[in-house]
Image (cartoon, each protein chain N blue to C red):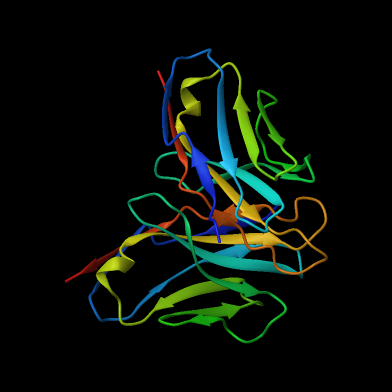
Length: 117
Length: 115
């Protein structure tokens, strides 16, 4: 069974600085997807960034980028130029590609990020 | 483009009752997944519906059941409610096609409180 671990329950960062959130996962699959979702106090789950395991290039979306290390089963999220609106709970998630249970997201426990002015 | 919507936003029930939660998928999407998120935890997969059939189920008892309709909207039904069913219920829609990335987009959730 796949598992996702986020070892940092809480983090804080000053506005305009850079912060990195950690995520590790365990799987025997070779073909899968990884995601970061953010959940602000409104509780709406919002997609931040996604990565296909077969792609070696790390995904980037504006101020958000990932460091995907497939051999180490690590998928960290870097937020540059942090903004007050980035304050939220961040979840790392794994999805197996196809087959039985393909399409099921497995989430970590979350990291609560506070951006301070 | 219409996003994922859920109703109701909040619901209070008593133990033993039954509840139905509803979800309308994002336009162009054909798959709906349901998740339960207890307070302070990550979401847990309940089940997924594709072409009006269950397409994968998590570790939830049979009293959790669902439906998908021809317009791809979906319902989650929970019978014999228990106190531990109190949670945020999230619906996510995606496009299930021939391979490729099936990114799931979430609705705002329904907060259920069982007393």
